[in-house]
Length: 352
Image (cartoon, one colour):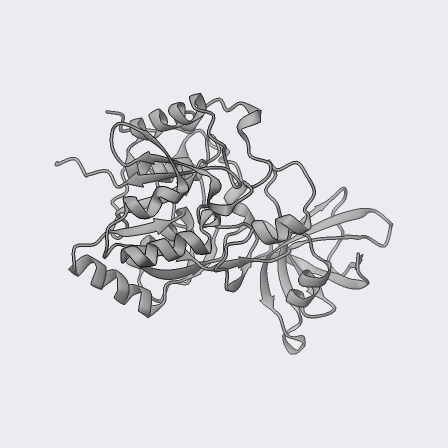
């Protein structure tokens, strides 16, 4: 059994035609690879309620994707793109400040005022969170959330090649999205519709939620062959007291905690590891990590050499995950945000 890992261990060849460019016609119309046991089983997502037990607890990420991609131009006329990662102060008395990624041919200097499409302005204040930070701090001329809602574009992942549409505004969002702040969807939850939720309720499966605002860093490639040298991006999260109580009650009755998506895993495990005062996490879960909360994981298929490949390998075992991915590719499953799902069980720790 492999115990030491490098970046190349998490690589695989994915035919481009398996990258889902659009969601299925029905949210729950995707396939579900049941990978809880050694033998993979091909299912439909609508079978999920039958795979869970009365008393199990599904934990969702209720973050809401904002239309965080904004376009504009510098005073010189050069075009630029902002991707708002975090609203720092939405109100005028606090400056309407945001932290954003900036894509432009030549970076402007602090103090530069950009005229944005839609008739508002963005003033560059400097780097964020410090002078050497990876993001840029801007002051917008009005409420950031209102400006994004009116003039922004859905921040579709880089592997989706079409421009955002009205359909994406609806489908790159979960049916229970509540708290605005994410620039990427918690994609495992995109499969749930009201019919599946009703079937889960009827079966006696409980529900709870966390909030983790997914950042653009989720798509950042790991650039070091030694995964120990990779530094994770920070994301804001909250695990409500009601969710912690629901988890405790689930464990007490012998139920299983089912995390819907890797973002939910990161929120729950961060809370367990760092305590209730932690609200920003850069937890990096790699093989060898001991999970404290999650028993089952519902997730989509992830990019080669990504931190999410490392997380699911930590959860269910490296060899098992790589075998499941080989099966999924051979069976032409759809990959990534608009793709199919898989259900995984936590690997039993090997006795020392």
